[in-house]
Image (cartoon, rainbow, N blue to C red; front, top):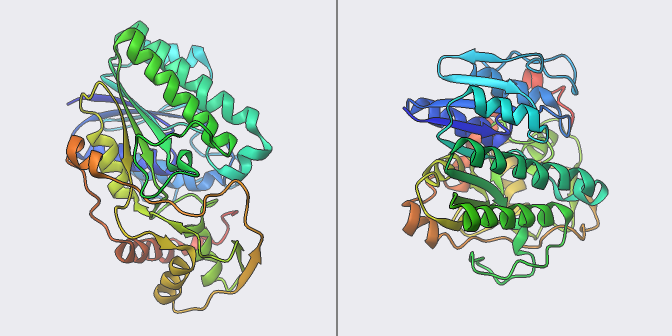
Length: 344
């Protein structure tokens, strides 16, 4: 058994990564500040599953979590509500728990929101990362996995390779992720911490974020509510299924020195229109489109070169978009009774 600290453990990727590690017999300590950037009932759903529940235990508000009032334990999983921007909490966590490696998935996400609130992104995505790295140094933890983003590749030639020049980000979100990458490299160079940076490409699947298009579009189509579509829908994304992302994140725990590694679908990227068509097919309903202007902070296309992940981590995605969209709709239909109240 190994002992892992996962930050952002109530998040979409964090919860699934924790679940995968627990299924392999490891011990996980998870921390999350349960902020209300999006409806926390979705975070409660994920935490409830990891704490042995059915996924139906959640708070009665979009802003207050059922799990925010104290430490929870279930078998080899410990959940601690807290913020990595609070150095005291981070210190106490490392002092009281055995940690073999850190998987830092805590971050403020979302391109559009970052344009309006850049200071929040700088605080969480960079300052919080520094708190973790400092604690790792103090307590002798030598392995660090940092979640980063394909948003850094704006303007680069597709398919994106890790060696591309990403020094001109086009959103505060991407800029703070780049800063966190640079800080991780500094700690590797100065202190020998082993660092894997995984750049994710459009993660989707069951229990996905409600501010991202997959859950929004499935819900809107099913409820016959107009879909808000920025641009004409021709923009493409390298959709990557959540189980594949969790597997790649875990594979990145191996010693690598310092490496940046793309985790993407490895498929022909889907256009947003194609994704909508897939949901229409699975739900048996037609979408109503409310088209809006393309957002300047968005990218027109993403596509990952994943040869490095294959070579270094022996990782390749297993779930094709057609199957992933089907599983996403099945989860939505199973949980429709409470998802109807989720704020998008």
